[in-house]
Image (tube, rainbow over all chains, first blue to last red):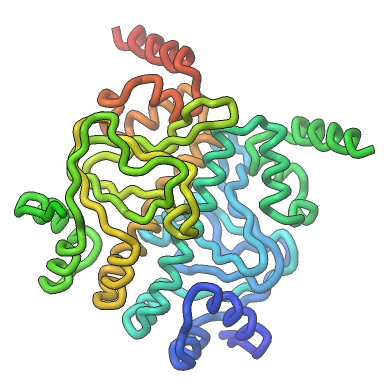
Length: 201
Length: 201
């Protein structure tokens, strides 16, 4: 098992302290149960068909979660960058095989913690359960906002909103994946981007 | 304050026990901090512009949460029926005014619990915090599934999926609201329903 070094501990501590105040004991117990993983570009954290029994904290790098739709197309559901937790909650909660795959789009480093380890921590340190309640609420809010803009915005504005919300990481993602995430064809996204460039010049 | 009677306590207990095992003390403390509300059809639990400081448990009846989009149209974001918790998490977490309104579509009864009361309960009974972590995760899973079908399904299939997932309560909702929820025009929804009726006959 790869254990965490000072830099990773500091990154996790900075994140956690935005939500809750953990005692040193609680934070140390948390770190001891996390595993560090280094991934190459295109490597998977899990693939559709596997039960997702981990939550992942991205230390650096970039991930996409996607599923294969009825027509055989890869549909991007989420991206995850530095300082985001990611998992497939549906598989995590139900313990049934995931419909999603989680793949690194850049060389990346993540921490993982398993469901059984996390449940032990919840019992020992209720403040860690609070942290994950707050993370679930925050994750839900992001999904709700995405639903809102998918239901209401003009398609041009959806792209603008996405660029704003993702504060620049769009440039790190292949544009056909951005198109998929937004529910566009790659051609439609190219057209919007070209229009925007024209407006700026 | 309207306090809970035996029937409401039993409904809440049945719901809670699907997720966690609460001690009698914890459950009684929970009930004591809940308020019972009876609403007429069309009455609001909260309206856009107010900070949403409550979570609501629907005992009976039916609600819609909606917002007014840029064109002035009421866009339905969610429905909530018996045995569902509902709130505007974004306003609840941020303590900023909500963009949503939550309105009864039938005469309804709900329990409410305030953020400050719930936070006191979390400190006293970590198992209640567990309950609300699990509720937030479940709520997120529902939103993720909705995103998946909005991104991938043919529009006819979206309606079918909705009828299936909502196990019949669609018949209790005005069809123009179902259309709004699905991101359709009312005319498009009528057309799909007419097609289906033809198929059946």
